[in-house]
Amino acid sequence: MLISFVISIMGWIDLLNMSMANHFIPNSIKWMIILGISVLPVLFPLVLVIGYWMPSTRDRVSYFLADIQKVKLPEILRFIVVLTIGVAYSLLLFSFYGRFFEGIYLRIFLVWNLSIIGAICIGKRESSGFLLRIAFTTMVIGFGYAIISLNRGISSSAFTLGWSEASRYYYASLFASSRLYGQRLAWPFLHPSRYILQSIPFIIADFPIVVHRFWQAFLWVSLPLLSIWVFLKRIVILKGYHAWVFLIWSFLFLYQGPVYYHLFVCILLVILGYQKDNIWKTTIFVVLASLWAGISRVNWFPVPAMVAIILYLLDHPFPGKDKLIKYFIPPVLFTVLGLISAFGSQVLYALLSSEEHIESFGSSFTSDLLWYRLFPNATSQWGIVLPILFLTLPVLVLLIVNFCRRQYSTWQWFPIWAIVFVLFAGGLVVSTKIGGGGNLHNLDAWLVILWILVGKLVFDKEMELGISEKKIWRPTWLMLVIFLLPFVYHIDFQRSYTSIIPLQVDIELEQEEKESILKRAAMANADGQEILFISQRQLLMFEGKELPLTDEYELLTLMEMAISNNQPYLEKFSVDLQNHRFGIIIVEKQAEKISNRDDSYFSEENNAWVKNITIPLLQNYEEVRYYSYSHLTILEPKQ
Image 1: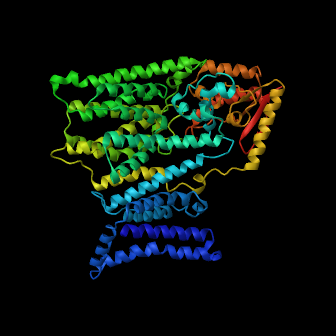
Image 2: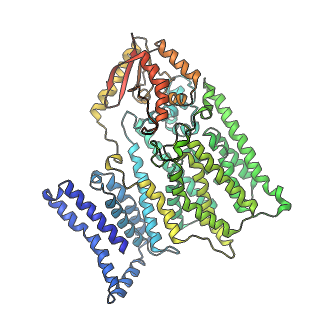
Image 3: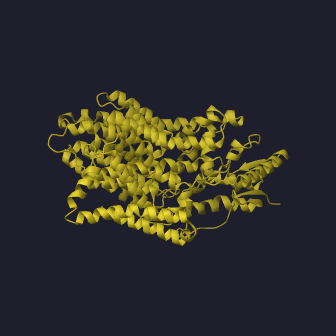
């Protein structure tokens, strides 16, 4: 009650200050009415607090609060109410009215009151107190926010919505290059498995770009949810309310990285095929998952085997030292066959890809490591170490205590925690690679392993039944922290309205620039000149299909070659520029500006680009037209 009153009064003051600052009150009767109605959520908890303090009314207030927590609604009505609450906050924030909720306390006030309503509607559940029900409703709001925020990326705009967005669609299109471009082009060397998933719409038909954006958003949501659902059905065996709690928390927890959707294919295959009493079936699925990991990222190679090993060790008590070798045959089998499959898959893909610069597949091993990005810096305000420890330390406490209470053998807990440590250390190292350190996604495998351990040790009913003396340790205060941290991290109450609203497209200006760019490209092509789209290559894919494609020197490829210092590739690029190979080049506006790591975002990446790309470009080509809306420039050879 007291918490509700404090949050409500702070939210109301936020609303009042915003109204005063924007002069809503003198000019609008409507805002006077809104402010008047908004006093009610403040007065109600205040009345309850006062009533509880007064001896004559304390019992009545206590009975009232107890009755509220026992409200029972029909199942379908409960579902509808909670679903409505889950999307109400996000729909409000992402709409026209979101501009009126800029205050941090006003947003907290809104979430808190929606969560209380949701907790009341859920009704009393088994082993679920009122605070935990509030936390669950809050997670539902966070889940709705995550899903709806993906709509920002579903746009019909012909221009890229982010620095590398257009590159993603271009790489995906290469798997259907024979149909799209009339020639077999080299498959992508960066994260092929991601682009295989994104290529499906290209393979099916000639869809507009908005369909590809929708498909990518669908992958971000569907693959995590499918993996969590299969985990619930096959490994943890949860049903009803507790299954919903675990599903929504899992999604938010894994979204902290975020864990990329193509990693979930590996996880999904392992949990689909895992069978504790059938090691060979498990091994087959570990091999399949490792084949996928092999065409993904190098640091994912051991992940399928690691997941299978953890499940095996938790499900099979150590039989004694006399059976030590037999006990560890399955983990060794998972590891050896998994790694062989992953490396073999990468080699086979590289041979089939037709990539001329085969050394590109090893670009990760020649890139600089920027250790300072582990700590607060200009690229990431808090760095990597502090956020990941803050977000996962409560989970680690929960796991460590439950491990100790279960009294596992050293031969069980040591390999498990060795895997946890290796993935954590490996994730930190990969996060320091130039090009990384902007978020926590390189710790994705570590987040996945923690999620699996929480599922098995804290939620698995079968394992709980196997405990004879001590129950699972999950105190309410710790579970509240674990449930709410991913919500707080993701929803970020301080984000401004302009940073979360969907992209506003100026249709006329966009059409004008798009037609002008393609017209210039067509004129150059008619004169027999070669055209190079470094940036915005999706214009050729979706708008200018009649123009020939130069598949070399795409934006993301150039950046990877620049930061990995691939001299043979960069020298070839420089020679082509000196020889004026291209009649026109379409690229984002270039500036020969060297950045300082203390005050610039991704400064080393910028400097590598300037040194290896911008300077050779501007030495040999000059700007003839700049487009302010798309930030594109057209370069032509210097005379």
